[in-house]
Every structure is written in structure tokens, then in C-alpha cells.
Amino acid sequence: MLIISFDAVGDDEFTRMLSYPAIRAFAEKAAVFRGVDSLFVSNTYPIHTSVATGVTPEKHKLISNTEPFPKKNPVWNTREENIKARTLWQAANEKGIKTAVVFWPVTAGSKTIRWNMPEVMARPGESQILTSFKAGSVFTQLKLFLRHKKLMNGIKQPYLDNFATACMVDILSEHKPGLAMIHLTSFDTLCHDNGKGSADLSTAFESLNANLSALLKAAGDDRDVLIFSDHSQRNVHTVIEINNILKEAGSFTEVKPWKHSALPRSGRANRCYTFRKSLGSGAYVLR
Ligand SMILES: [Zn+2]
Image (cartoon, rainbow, N blue to C red; front, side):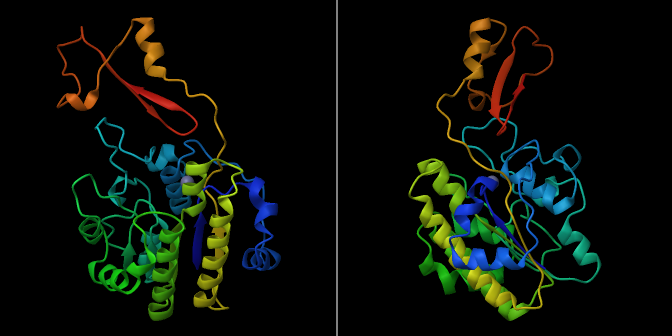
């Protein structure tokens, strides 16, 4: 089976997508489920982990894209060990089925993915290539990176999706994995950058269409293919800073948490640190 994630492509984009030939041809042959609700927490990593485990974030415990504890730069929740439920690739491995992953979230450090190019982000000052090598299959990634790095332009889209697709096409052709999972994010990135309804999103659809075509060709006719999306996006006009409301209420003292080496220790109950963190459709407060 080949599983393809079109990140952030909501049902409201379905009609527009059908104007792209490879997507239309696929939809005409496929069983199509429209209007599927996302789940809470409606962020990319919790949802992909729910797709990979079949359980809600409450059960698999991957409740945020980034680690909940405050640091100046967000630390993405990329480690497989943070998933507290059995994953598709672990189940496949138990049956002797080999898995290939390209940029699927939360697969870093996996011992059961045979060809693993995980989605990981280098921290400031770190090398992206070394970060990727440490998190996934070194030899596979080195070979694919040398072969296809010309397709990349940093992490700009749609170049990154084109690189990811070229890597997965090679893996499908050379190794024929029983389970293959790829995460394409051009629509999500360009939506964040330009807003929903922007003309720039045509670039994302053109890329998704061309990449789908290449992936289907490499997958062959006898392979099941599943395309899904994790959530939609919506234009916003106002951001409410909950920290400011808490401060005005006088009940809390907001600090820049990354300026402190640790959260408050017990015995200092007179001081209370709060940290507001966005959770897609919600927020939580640590104190
Ligand atoms: Zn997403």
C-alpha cells in the first residue's frame, strides 16, 4: 500500500482539485470520502499519528506538533518513541512487511522502518543533513540526497515536495516496499504564506498533480493507493493573546519561560509561571 498525505487540503478544495488531470483520473477510479471531520487536536503531527495508529491523540499521547515545554525555538515532536500506541509500520514489521517513509511525521529514530527519511528540522546552528542522518536511514538518505538535492531550494515549496517525490519514486522502483508513506506539504506551506484562496496555491496543486502522477507510475497498477488530508485551513483576521488576558486579570505572572532553566520548583508557590501554547483549534496553559 502507498499512503500519500496532501497536507491541509480541505474538502472545500475538492472541486478545484478535479481540474488537475492526474488528481481527477485518480478520483474517478477511487472510492472518495468527502466532508470528513478532522479531530482534536487538529494539528499535523497528532492527526498523522492518529492515521498511523488508529487511535485519538488522547490515547497515542502525541498531542502537539512541538514539545509542550517552553524553549525559545520550538522543538518539533519528531521522535517515534513519543507515540504511545502501535503504529502501522510496527504492525507491518511484525508481519514481515517492509516500510518506506519519506517525510512522514513522528518517525525519527524508528527501528522498524526499513527505508526511513523522516521529517525532522535542524535546530538553529545544527546541520540539517546531519540531523536527518541521525534520525533516519543513513545510507538511503545519503544516496537519495546526492541524487536529488538539485531539486531542493532549502525547505521552500513546491521544491521540497518534488524532492520528496523523487526520493519515494526511487524507493518504490528499487525496493518495492510493502508499505510506503509520504507526506507532501506544499499546499499547507503556501497556504500559511499566502492565505486561503490565494492565486499562489495553483503552484501547490500543479505540484501535487505532477507528484501524484509520478508516484502512481512508480507504484504500479497492482498497489493500493490511499490519499488523505489531515486538516483544512482558514484565513484569520484577529489573534487573541491569552497571555495578555491572564496578565491583566492579575492572577498570573507571565515570564519568558526559556529564560529560566526549569519550570518552578515546589516550595515556591508564591510565584506562578504561565505559558500559553497554541494547539491549532485550542490552546493549553502550563503553570
Ligand atoms: Zn497539516
